[in-house]
Structure formats: structure tokens, C-alpha cells
Image 1: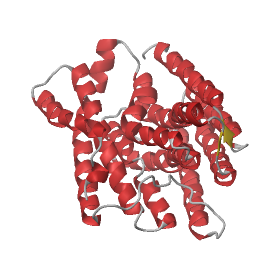
Image 2 (image 1 turned 135 degrees about the vertical axis):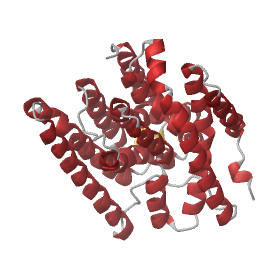
Image 3 (image 1 turned 30 degrees about the vertical axis):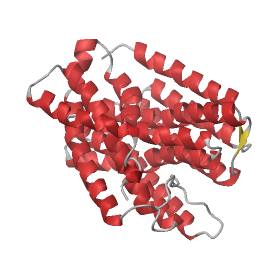
Image 4 (image 1 turned 90 degrees about the vertical axis):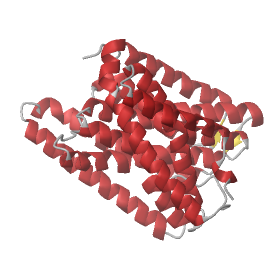
Length: 353
């Protein structure tokens, strides 16, 4: 009954009590960050498995809505805690990093793995093109406040108002897209599909979901608290931590699933995970964080750097181009991963503020 929650990656759960001990002992910030990150990985995997177990019992459309709501819960918890600490640059960077990570790194590695094993792989284009179109629209919407910021920068209140308006429009886009996918007869659910058949108890899934959420919140508190002293000690930028490290930490278990199903020649599911996760971040997580930030007195404006905007738009356009023909090969995967590595190197060498 519990075998769907038993995976090799769960060995990393040993780092949960280790993280607690280090935090209580006031250990080195770098060590606390690394151990807390390792603890989040299996917890986010358990949370995802529990969500899929519940989603698999509700039908494809309601299940898609459940996955869309809880699919990025781990990263959402981390970013909310970062907002609480006033680490807004980290939060903005993690939004961009989640999108480009899913579109370039996750999709790229999955395409390489599947292509090397099965050669050219095919997937259904209708939902992929719909998701890609929504993603490009959301990327432009997220980027617009950054463009207009150059003209209205002297008035911070206007920038915040524009960000709130933009977040409201994006949320409406998200709600309408979900209504369409839940009601249209010929529509595919616009969310991450489930990779697991129903196997266990619903109550067990609920218990795992609740327990993983509580532990993620606890460990993420340690992780976020270690960010500022860590970046000062290592001399890296908060931007790099947010755009590269945080998205990988919060979503690595989901990334593994995308690669595994690609190797099983289920490219529809693999592309659905990569595009669906990016959509959840762009259409749901990002605007939600803008409104949540008001509760903590640290308004989150959608003012991304030029480098972040360039990375976001380039990733969305390239992934849309890959998805439009419904076919992939390992070379396309290599190109996607190569672009991600170049972007990661660029963000690494950006000077810390």
C-alpha cells in the first residue's frame, strides 16, 4: 500500500533531522543551506507523489486542477518564506529560474535520455502548442513591468501598481485557461499530468501530503535563513542562488520523473511535465506571490533584470519552436541543455550587489 511512496531518493530524508540539529547548533551557513537543500529534495518528491495519488482518483480534469494547485508547493513555500525575510531578488530570480529550468534543463535532459534510447520520439502537438502559446503570452506579461519600469522608475508606487495589475491579469488568464480545460470537450487539461496509477490509501496520501508540507516549511525556514550569510561568505550573488539553485532544489524529484517517463517513450507525459510546470509558475505561482507579498509588508514588484527577461523570453520561444512539430531527437535536447548551461554560467559570473 505504501510502495508508491518508497523510492531510493527517500534515503535523503536522513538529512531532515540533520538540518534541525545544525540549525539548533548554529552551524555554518553554507552547511545549513546544503543539508537543508538535500532534505527538501525527498520531501518535495513525497509531496508530489501524494498529490498525484489524490489526483489519479479524481479523474483527469479535476486531477489536473489538483496538480496545478499543488504541483509547485515546495517552491511556493520556499519563496513565501523568502518574501517574509525580504529576499525579493531571490524570489524574482526563482520565478525566472523555474521557467527556464523546466523548459531547457528538464526538457533537454529528458529529450536526450529518450532520444538516445528510442531515437526520434513523437508527442501530441495540440496540447503542447496550446501550452507553449500560453507560456509565451505569460512571459511577455511578466516582462512588461520591467520594460515600463525604465520610464516610471522614479515613482515606486506606480511600479508596484503596475505589478499588481499585471499579476491580476495573469491570474485571470490562469483561471480562464483552467475553465477551458475543465469544460471544453476537446481540450486537454492545462496542467501537469499524473505519472502514477492509483495504488494506495487516500488517507495515507493525505497524511503524507500534510506531513511533507509541514517538514518542507520547517526545513525551508533553515534554508532561507542561511542564504544571506552564505552568499556573503562565498561571494556569489543572490540572483544566482534564486535562478539556479532554488528551482533545482524544489523540483528535482519532479525532474527525475520527466526523465524516467521519456526513457519509457512516454514523451507526451514528459513534455507535459516540463511545459505544465513552467505554466504553473508563470500563470499561478508568480502572480500569487505578488499578492502574498502584501501580507508581509514587502511588496514584490515584477521588476526583473535585463538578463532575466532575456533568458525568460529566449527559453519560451525556443521551447515553443521545439514543441510545434511534435517530434524530438537527442540533438535538440543537447541544444536546450547547452543553452541552459551558458545561461547558468552567465548568472554565476554576474557580480553580487
